[in-house]
Length: 401
Image (cartoon, rainbow, N blue to C red):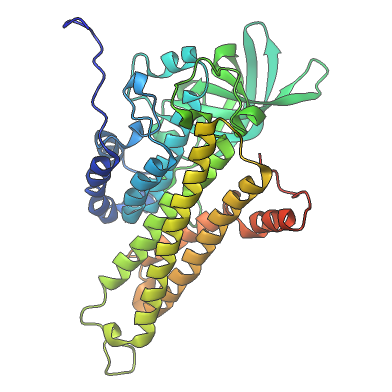
């Protein structure tokens, strides 16, 4: 390399070092969680602190200054973020997913996104809610995409859309990457949980998307991509998008569970059990509930390592996950989310009237846990039933691509 070379590849930290850096953000985010909850968005200066720690580089290609860590790396950093603020973690998780999605597409697209700005962030809405029509050189794209977590902090977005033929019939589904500047962000995020994510609706009307900024959605969900020879060599980029997104939820879930313990134990000194002379810390019921939640988190952490390893091994081997493994990934995350929510609800009951105070953190954390359990990738009434169907030899009704 010549000394005047314009690009010098930055050092990639160890996951342990990145984890330590990210952990420093936990108390900062915890102190300002109510602010984001109230405003419906994470403050820009907090997003920049997260960026300065290197968090958004986790799933970014090394070629453009990223780290190319595997899924467990994403879980580690999002756990620290969620322990401070669940909404911030959900935004980070979605922006990491967006960077990974661009990473598996064309080299020309990666140059578009990061060639002039290695700090560019990408949000993602993969549900095919738009309509795309083929035209010379690309597609014309129109649609509305709600639940666009991270859109307020991104300069690009990936969007799912149905591809329509000249006769108006559906020919398939695609992923389309467009600059945020091409879209209108309709501010309509007013919900009970993850209030600070700013997951507003993206609206796009008849915008041209060049061919190199597109991919086939069903192929990408399964880890198959027409840009096979162009994407980064790291096997991680051969992972199926659907399984990757699902298993990435573990980090936010673990952080929220730890936050419940942090928030509750901070209130214990000097507090008594109502209508008794006993302190809350001495209550065996409270001790048992704290122990149960801690054991649930130990179990979930092990499940996270196990399921991430299965996905990484499949990516390294270059083999897609079989349907029963995809069902198990979804079922594991769903079961873990329900377990942490139920054990956290016991802690909320122990907190009594003061636990309901909006000035405290517990109500916000419990709302975020409930919001996570309502998510389509997690909802147990769909996901666990799909896994149960595979156990009795039936085809699940839920799509497991």
